[in-house]
Amino acid sequence: MDIAANILERLIEAGFLLALPWPAWRLAMFRPFRYQGSKKAIALAGLLAAYSLLVVAMAIFTPALLRMLAILALFIAIGLIGWMWHGSSRGRRALPGKFEILPWGPYLDHRFYQRQAERYGPIFKTGSTLPCPSLRPTVCIVGHKAGLDLLRQHDDALQLWPPAPFSLLFPKGFLRYMNQDDHPVYNHLFRSAFSPNFLSGCSTAIDAEATNALSRMAADAKSGQADGVKPRPYLDQMLFAIFARVLFGIQPGSDAFTRLLPLYQQVNIPRLTLRSSRKRAQENLGRLTDFLVQEAQRDQADCGHSVSLLSEIARVNPTKFDDPTILGNLIFMLESGCNDVGGLLMWILKHLGDHPEWMERLQDQTPCPQNLRSLADRIVSETLRLEQSEYLHRKAIRDLDFGDYVIPKGWLIRICIRDGHQDSQVFKDPAKFDPDRFIDRKFSHIEYAPFGLFRHMCVGDRLTHEITCTFLAALAKSYALEATKDGPPEHTRFHWAPNPEFRLRLTTKD
Image (cartoon, rainbow, N blue to C red; front, top):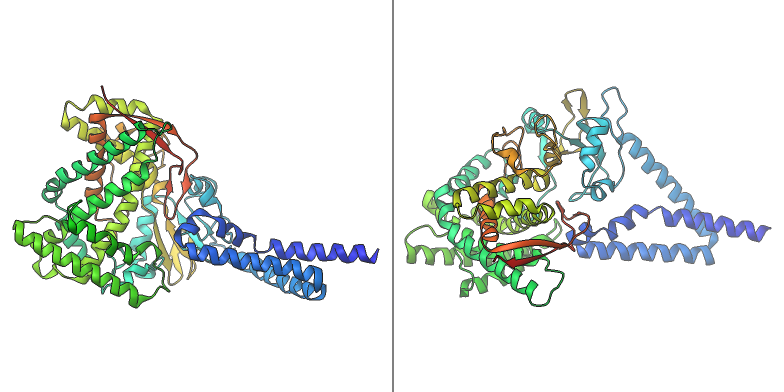
């Protein structure tokens, strides 16, 4: 009887200890976390495996030590429960919602924040999420007006979050993270350079790369891939070529383009962390910026006019030609542009596959370029509304009085712009894919804000539309599209995306 009781006690203690780090196990196995930092995921999985082996070994060989560890773990668990209770902020002006440590709902439910808003109201709390998981509670705001009110009322008490490691490598940082003095200067400079005239001058190069990518997709689908092709690799290659040409004037296929790729890869923006070697990263960045300045000077001398955004900035303000902050921002735009525009194009292709009637309408407009562009622009706008809109993260650096609630100091804040586009009072049948909703109505910025709110909005909105609309026009003119394989959407590092197994087949139009 004593032996059976001892075995049962060991099993209970070991089971409790093995179950305690279950959230960390789920984090280590979670695809976006592995993508964000594979070394971190491997290290965490290795640490958890070693911990599990240690618990099993203690259960077999040192049961007394196992009991001591179980008691210590029990106190830790009680402390975590107390922290969660504190995070629930149960005062009279407490925020509704449920605070969880490392919540999984945002990564398992494509409409998580929308459903939480329907349950608790437009302002609620949850646990912190990627790209900045921590033990801090997060206040979520669904509704553009409320989000804009918070940004305006408490601008001086909201810290941009999470810190961007790459932004620390050049003097004034990435545009979105600049302070209130520097941001207006650089924001105006970039927006002036992204002029309609400059973008129209890039349309031929964008069309050439889109046509090339579509041709390769169709050829590969025809040459033996019966279930179609995964479009993302083709889109990534196309977008890198487009952004290299638009931002720096480097032509795909040139010697400069061949030299650009390894220099860019050495900077390795996706793998930079706050603990990365700052010296090595700055050395790699320095080599890349020196190369880009040399190429831009050569092109400017040969052509005598703006052939890239960098040279257009130099035309607007000659003193900024070799500004390290300008160059650093352009390099980061190359990275973020490929990721974000690639994600948007994936959603566009998925919606056209799910709703072939819109692909047919797009093809019907090919005889009239103006109508084709108008419909393409509406398809892009509707896809942005439903899927690829920005979200804003901030951190409260003091207690904030906001409406009926108090947001405690240190809490994180997420303004859920994509979910704000599901307001049925603004968008009729908001879950429906309906590009024609943009025909007769021009939505205000408070109603429709896919590129962000307030001061730190994305400056690449017009370029995004130029690339995606040109891609759609090239697709409609020459190809029919069929989705051949799909699955549920999946959360990536920053956004939801179509299933990684999403495939399509392009066939040449008769």
